[in-house]
Image 1 (tube, rainbow, N blue to C red):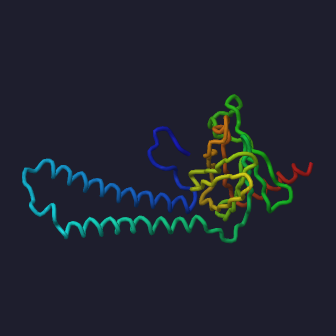
Image 2 (image 1 turned 120 degrees about the vertical axis):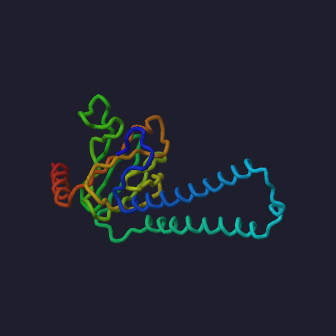
Image 3 (image 1 turned 180 degrees about the vertical axis):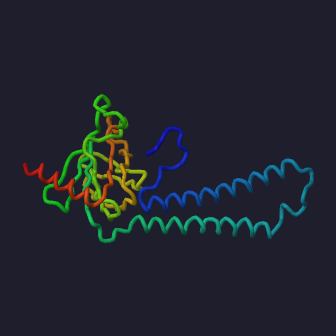
Length: 232
């Protein structure tokens, strides 16, 4: 969960997000080293009274400032491509959930069950219980089992939406008439918050996403109760 004045990312709750955090630190260190080198060269050039007569025509320097950036780009590109392929991997999901974006709420359908689905609306500020988060709480959470591969099918019924949960490293557009898919594994129990990340109208900021990761036994109990309620 993000907090005021936070500078970094949220704590990772999935293996993919952990990889993204490591890549961010890797790229940030490269940027820091480049910035330090450039700043040193600028200060040295401005402060010194000496001149180098070879500085305007040096084949060695030209080779260095051509090869070195290419090597740096490769050091950034290879880990980035690896993570892109990891994010596309969907191997034998244990559960498939279809998320549909509407103006302005989400509906979830657990396609492995015959009749398990619900709409998820934001809880109005005046109805919040103590300790709940304004603009982030939903009346129905998307409950998933911990350490199980989950496939999410994402689409929209009216306009463009975007299903995004930062702690899980997920952001996927919901496009009317198109079915996008992604997958994640929650590495620990918890409640993870997200919001629609595509401007979708007047109440765009009022359609939160709440994912609750629970042990498998608790998920089975929850799904049984939901199916019993649906049959009544």
